[in-house]
Amino acid sequence: MDFSIEFFVSADGKCPVEEFLDELRKTNPGDHAAILAGLAKLKNRKNHRPPLSKSVGDGLLELRHVGKLNTRVFWFFMKGQRIVAVHGIRNKGQTIPARELRTAQTRMKDWLKRHEK
Image (cartoon, rainbow, N blue to C red):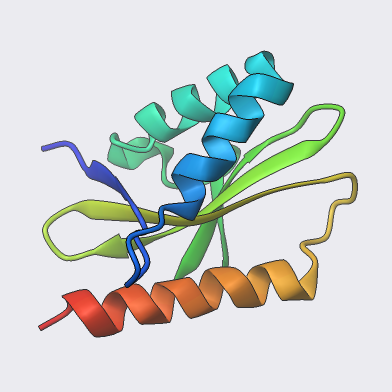
């Protein structure tokens, strides 16, 4: 059975990952296509490990595409073989900026609070 991919939606109805992907499509169509392909690959359990994906701690994982700028989408698992993508970033370095990681963790906690019953 495949996993399903969902995007985080805030309490006020915004979808930051979708907004990130829309902007990426405009600015770098090649990286956009690579991230969409990576998200599609996450549907298969065998891709839930490096090199496509790796844990960044506290139940949060990253899908990473290396290019001129590194493109990352942070996600976590939910019951029922679901994956929830919560945040997307682009950066030059190998390390994840602390504020970006906090944003992803905050969104994950918010999603769990509102959806896990």
